[in-house]
Each structure stands twice: as C-alpha cells, then as structure tokens.
Amino acid sequence: MQLLDGKKTAEDIKGEIAAEVQKIKDNGGKVPHLAAVIVGNDGASLTYVGSKVKACERVGFESTLVKLPSTTTEIELLNKIKELNENDDIDGFIVQLPLPEQIDEQKVLMAVDPSKDVDGFHPENFGKMALDMSTFIPATPFGILELLERYGVETKGKHTVVIGRSHIVGRPMSILMGRKGFPGNSTVTLTHSYTKNIEEITIQADIIITALGVPNYLKADMVKDGVVVIDVGITRVPDDSNAKGYVITGDVDFENVSKKSSFITPVPGGVGPMTIAMLLKNTLLAREMRIARKN
Ligand code: GUN
Image (cartoon, rainbow, N blue to C red; front, side):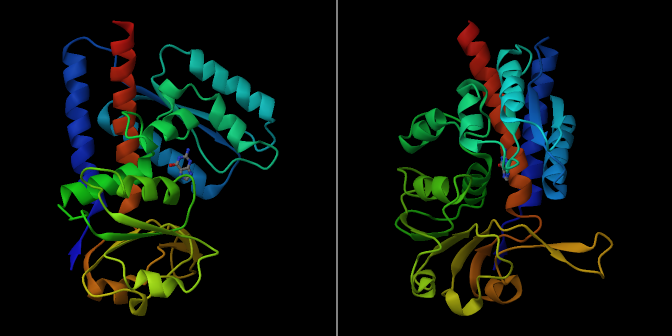
C-alpha cells in the first residue's frame, strides 16, 4: 500500500507557486490576489476559509477575506460580488459554500464573473470543463487529478466508481475521469443515494472516489484487492478525548481498507490540503489570463 500524501504534495505545489510569485516580483509585476467571501459563522467553513487565506500568505499572494453576518440578504451578497467582479486589483475570488438558506446558491454562483471564478463553479466554466476546453477546474477534483498524476496512478481503461454526485466533487470528478488523456480514459460509474446494491459496484472498482460525508462508510468487504481509494470525506466527529472536541473523519474505514489498497489517501492529510493548493494554482492562472486579455 502506498499513501497518496496530499500534505506533502500540496507543500511541493505551494513551493512551485511561491517560486512563480518570486519571479513575478523580480520582474516588478503585480502578485496574484485572491478574495474569499464567507457568510455566517459555521466553524468548519471558517476554518477552511482561514486555511485558504493562510495559504495565500505562504506563497506570497495578496488575499482579502470578506466576512458577512449570517443575516446577510441575497441582494447584499450579490452587491458584494459585483464589487469584487469590478475590483481590478482582484484576480479571483470564491464564495464559500454552503450559504445560509435565505440565499439562492445558484444565483450567487451565476453572478461571479467567469474570468474570476477560481472555484470553477460558474456554468460557463463547468460547461467548458465538460467539453475539454481550457478553464478553471474545481479545486477538489483538480487536486485529486494532480495526486493521481504525480503518483503515476494508472487510470486508462480502469473502472472508476465515484460515490456522491455533489456539484463540487462527485459530478465534476465523474466527468474528468472519463475525459481523454491522463488522468482520465476511465470507465466511470457515478453512484448516489438511489443506487441499488452499491457494494456490488464498489467491489468491481479499480479506483474509488468517495465524497459522501458519512464517516467510515466504505468498508474492506466493499472493495477488491489492489484498489485505489480517494477519500474526500471530512466530517467532524465528536470526540471528548481530543482537545478540539472532535476528530476529522473520512468516508473510508482506513485501517481495514488500506490493507487491500494499492494507493490510498489519508484523512486528514490527503485531498484536503490539495484543494487549497489547487485553488492557489487557479488564482495564478486567473492572473495570467487577465494579463493576456489586457495585452
Ligand atoms: N465548500 C466546500 N468545498 C468548497 C469549495 O471547494 N469551494 C467553496 N467555495 N465552498 C466549498
């Protein structure tokens, strides 16, 4: 079994990005600027956004954190997005999900200027991704592709089973793994809450990507020997013995599934850090595209 070490790989990528930023600085250029909008006080979301801002500092990006109260109206948020769209200093921005229930998520994602949509959630960018056109790939799927590529995990002709059809992970992942090229050229099965006898499908999988949010869902008897397992789950499970009062737990029963795996991501330290690294990569790309458009 080989660990797909997202923590180390993300550090490598951040080192590469930091070197690019240094080159920009040496040439007297403007460093990339990422903004993140968060609405409300959800602890996990605040932690994720905080990590994104901290990562900007680490690579030499400028960053702006926009914190709005949970009572923010849809109009107020749309006005803030308009401001960020028009702010020439900002190369890219994200609106952290989920949003409070008074706000229509789809309206918000549609309001983001596609050229600044470093999450890749705007329908224009999502459509381009599905059509193999150059665009922003959503950070978590992008991070998974990067891990598979850097570890040389074979995907061609393999059966990839994706568990969960969220717009952020499962759905884009199912498209990307079936694309022409590497990583890709897989035969993909997208499973979800209405899938029957899922264990009969997972047992046939060469690669399993699980983004369900159910702790320890994938058990050893659901997978075959030599399987590649990518665990996107990051659920906070209450644990009084831990100083934080919780432990971050993945979708995979790691202890037992890892014994049958050829490659597997740990939680934490797998996909999570990769998501942040790829968001930075998308921001660097957004800056390059802006400069190309201006010239
Ligand atoms: N919530 C969970 N994952 C993500 C993500 O990748 N981007 C945003 N904006 N919100 C999220």
